[in-house]
Every structure is written in C-alpha cells, then in structure tokens.
Length: 296
Image (cartoon, rainbow, N blue to C red; front, side, top):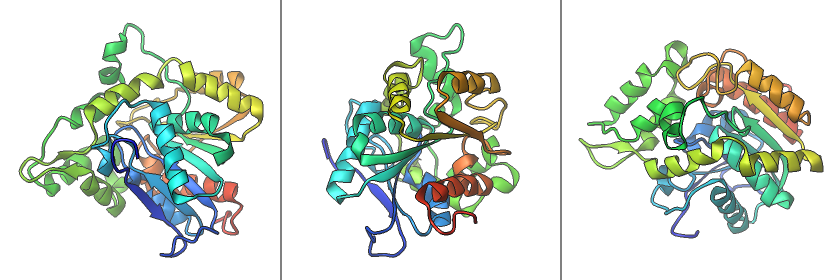
C-alpha cells in the first residue's frame, strides 16, 4: 500500500476465507473503523465481507495523506488487487458512501451493485458557513472527540454510553468492541485513532457535489444499481437526520435511478451498530447477494 500497511478486517463463512462465497466490500464512516460492520457481518454469515480501516483511521491511521474520496477509492482497488477478489457488491456508510460512489465510477468492473447507508449523496452547506468552518458545523462533537484523551478503556466506554446515539437499549457488546478498537496510545492518555487532519481533508469532499455528484449521475446513466438506506435521526439522535425529508425528495427527483428507503427508528450510528439498523442493512445485502436466507 502506498505509504505503509492498510489494515483490513474480514468475515466469512469459515476461517479459510472461502473465495467462492459472494463478496462484499464494506467502507466505514469518517471517524470510524472496520468494526462498524461487525453486526452486519454477523447477520450475513454466508457472505465474505472485506472491510478496510480507511487511510487515517483505525490501524491504518499512520498512512499519510493526501486524503479524499479518490485516494480512498484507490486504496479499495489496491485491496481488491492484493486479495485477488472477484467482482463484489460495494456498501458504504456515512463518508464510506461517498468513497463507494467514487470507487464505483473509477473502477466500474470491480463492483456489481452499490448500497449506500446514510451517506453518498452530497450534503448541503449550511447557510452562512465558510468552507473552513464546515467540519465544526456538521461533525462538531465527532471531530472534537478526536482531540480528547481518556485515562483508560472504561472511561472511553462511559463516554460512548453517555452519547445520545447509544442511549437506552442501543448499548451492546458490538459498541464496546468498536470503542475499544478505536483507542490508541497508552494509559492514562489513550485517544481515538482517527487522524484529525484526515477527517478535515475528507470532509471537504462531502459537500456541494463536485466529483461525487458527477459520479452519481454517471452511475445512474450506466444503469448500475444504486440503493440508499437513510436514518431519520442524526449523529446526536436529533431530527432530521443527515438528509432531511425535503432533501430526500429533491434527490428522488434529481436521481430517480437511486432507490431511497428510510430505516425506521435509527440514527446515523445505530443504522449500522444497532440491532434494528444492522438487521435492515443485512437484509438489504442478502437480497442483493441473492442468498437463500434473504427473507430472514
């Protein structure tokens, strides 16, 4: 990998990594890691799911920039080449959806279908916000977390337990594992692994269209199937979510080839890390894969 080693998580039907199983490339969000996909992988036991820690995140945090959607897409291509993967379904959550859109356009022969999970459609720049202030305006608490330190793993788990996205019944072992994996460094100064500079650079590709919007229109024109599952609530469990109802209707008109469906009663995090969200995403994946348990 250009600049170092990219860490890749893998789940499959057995420990041998059976390449005969249908393959899914799963791309996580802007401050996340491959473990965001663990609940969905558990619900898709017949699929081989390959999920990298993107450059600047998780155990790939040391990989240098520049960052951006095209750079991450090139990293996906390198993973496919290194692992000699067959044509795969491409699924992306949050920023991973934007990476997926660009990757599907740049490497059309690598991917059969595209599933976006609460991401991938360009975001609206809030009124009165400069380009330099976009990160704080939209990712606020998620970006601030990257500058925090924690004395031990319990303190970090408690941080997530207090997070509005995981209140009540949303807390689970999957979230514990996700939080523990995210930490780097030594006690008493553990910190989240994602690079703030990577997040800053990548966030600029999420707004206004540009290469992402061009890729969406090109994919629609070529007839490549694209589906989007949305969350009605946002990063802090607030309403509306990442895409307001009016934005969703606008995109339905502009990109009628993109099939958009809402997953009820989830937020931007729990659409992948919560039980109801993971079940809905896994069901969609099984339908795309044509596996025998698709109706489960």
